[in-house]
Length: 355
Image (tube, rainbow, N blue to C red; front, top):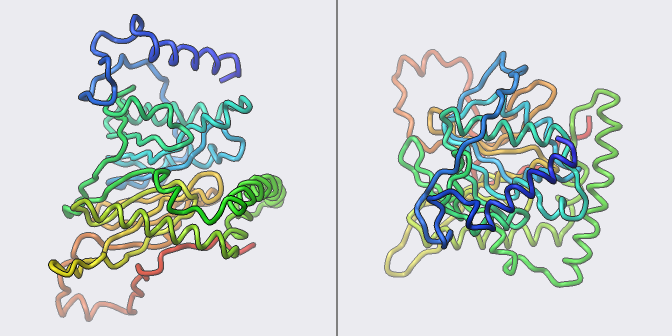
C-alpha cells in the first residue's frame, strides 16, 4: 500500500467513524455502552500461503505490541507466523497499529498491509478475532463492543481454555503509574530505548547479511539494567493484583515488551486463605522479541518465540492447564529417559545468545 493509498484509507475510516450520516444504520450514538454490531465486510484477496508445508494448529494465540506503522516492526516474521500457525481464537492484546508512529511519520510498507489483510482474512474465515486496543492505538478504545470486519473490539476479555481455566486479557497501559521509577529515569529510558532500537535495527541488517538468526540487542541491554528490572517487577505485580479482583486463573497482557510466563502466589486474605497460584503471561512484542503466547489443543499454555529461519515456534516455557491422567505401569516401563519439567515459577526469558 502506498502512502497515498494509506492516507485515503485513513480518511475513509475516520470519516465513517466521526460522521453519523456515513455510519451504518445499526451504529449506536454512544459506542461505549452498546452490544456488538457488524460493519459491512470488504472483499480481501487471500494471501498465498508459502510457508504452510508444516502447519501447526493451536486453540488460542495471543499477540501484542506489533506496532504496524513503526519501522522497527518485524512484519515479515509475523506474516510467516500467521500463515504457518492456525488457531481457533486469535487475541490481539493492544498496540497492533502504532498510530503514534504514523502521526510522526508515515511508514506503511507492503508487509504491514499484508499483516493487516491476513488478520482480517482469518476473521472472515472462522477464526474468532478479538482486539483489545492499547495506548498506541487508543483512538480505537471508544468503539469497544463493536465489530469491524468480523473483529470484535473490547477493552478486556476473559478467555476460557480447554480445561475450563479462565484467563483475563488486557493490554496493561493502565498500570503505568504503578511502574514509574522517577521522571528523570522515565525520560532517560525513553531516549535510550529509541537509541537501542536504532542500533538494533542496523545490527539486525548486518547479522541477516551474514546469515545469522535475529537477536535483540535492545532486550539484551534491558535485561541488564537495574532500573528496567525494577519497573518490570512493579508492572508484573500491578497486573497480578488487578487480576485477583476477578475469578480467573491467570492474566495475559503486553505493553512492556518483556515476554514472560510464570506463576505467583495470590494475596492471602485472613478470612479466606487461597493456596492457588495465579498465572502471569506477557506475550512480549514484535519490535524486539517476536514472541507470543499459545494455548495448545491439549490445554498447555506456552510462551514461544518465532524462529524465522526454521519457520517454527521455539517454546521458551510452558504451563499445563489441563491435568494429565496418571500413567499406567506399562507406560512407565516404556520410558527410556526421564523428561525434564519446565520451570514455571521463573518464566522470564532472556534474549538469545549471540551466534
